[in-house]
Length: 199
Image 1 (tube, rainbow, N blue to C red):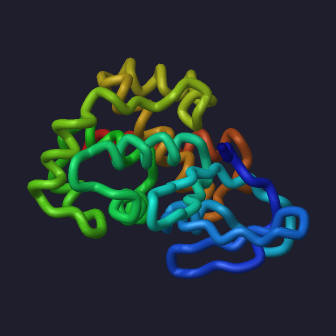
Image 2 (image 1 turned 180 degrees about the vertical axis):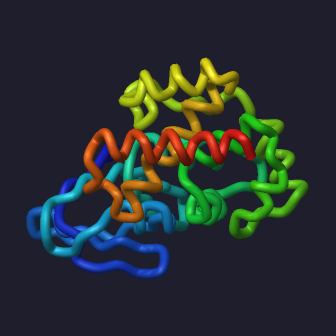
């Protein structure tokens, strides 16, 4: 029904984003990752991807900084015992790319460090979603083909490399490093990716 909304940010809450579009102010439930990724308030228009959750007794609109985060969110809600709010909590503690990496690596310890996720549920998430979530072509990792190829040549798994590079890209955007020169950004991602993949 709604794919995305484009407007200006008018306010924020602990798990909420307020977005004004043409005389209407929307309240969207969002993850901490989205709050960190979408900067500004009342400045340049931002695009927020959406998902309308509709049940007989309630209707809620969820917002996401990108289609990749929404895709991961929807897959998480298909896991038995994980509802929309639990999925948002998980995404508040990491980036979509890093979450995919943990699933592919069967990193139970990494998952249980996410908000509201116990060991049994983490194992269930891995069992349900491992292999189903990969970084989509054209996402953050897709713009670093040579960097990815170089890491693969060093012996790292391509799927894991793509996930880590996508996660680092999003993290650099979220912490204000988007202003780095392209070459400098590439070097920083390469350095951080080696550290993370080696760990």
